[in-house]
Length: 392
Image 1 (cartoon, one colour):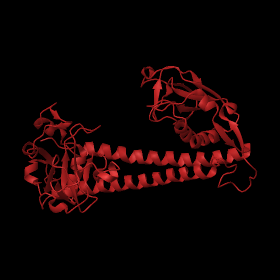
Image 2 (spheres, one colour; image 1 turned 120 degrees about the vertical axis):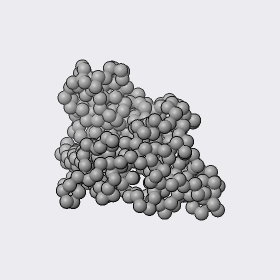
Image 3 (spheres, one colour; image 1 turned 90 degrees about the vertical axis):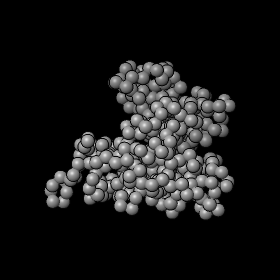
Image 4 (spheres, one colour; image 1 turned 45 degrees about the vertical axis):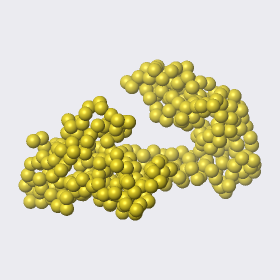
């Protein structure tokens, strides 16, 4: 049988026994208990990213029936299989209930509990690895779906072949490693969110609110009212000329679109320092600082030749623009920006010295956010690589 590329050694330095093949029915038993008398009022859903989670937290509403007595009653530590496709999870996902003591889950899901002698933490990581996908693909009716669900019966599901360590000690070491990694990821995510919340709070307090002439928080050496200027007086504003088909993943130059991500392209039409603004779509108003040579989508606005501090304008526009967009939303469907909306956008402006201090403050915050994001991405990539090498 195929063995994983990367393995632990036993404490005495010897190798553990080779992994073995087991069917799910050998290590688990199906759960079909019902939520009689609605003994739990927590309506669960399965997210491939967030796991088994309260629908109210995931959807911001309840999509379950008011009467959930016919739903399965799932208890902490038990598992459920969601056989619906989602991005990156072509054959669904298996998740363990970790967040609540119990919850109610639709009978569309297949629920099970591990036998007492099995290591639950190991199997949680094993199912997260998706290394069971090839075996599931063999038993499901490929391409056959019912309302987006894979055609996998419960009987067939419990015939799923699992490739697992024979030694429970090896299982525990693997589980412990990934638990430590998950803790690092959660800690990094919490710190990143803290920096983002700090930035958002400072943006609201370090720029004047509508109708006011000074901000709530200010560096002590500065006094006096801020002046009002139109954005079109502070920079040149134009748009890109290309459509999204022009991008080339192997291109030399950055390509800014109406999305958040930055793509690549073969030819440049602009040079920084610049600010780009997404002009339409779900991310309308999203800003990038662009440097060097670059190009842009036809509905992306390009700001250059600044008479005010660029970083200051970047932060100021970011505070002012979203409200303005939805005050003057153009069109009944997808929101978009027209040129005169930007040229007439009123910017509150302090002295050059105060602009510089504010710009420096938010630049430092952005650097902290970038560093923390890279640390988080690094942990996630490490986990992804280890999941591929430590399971088979």
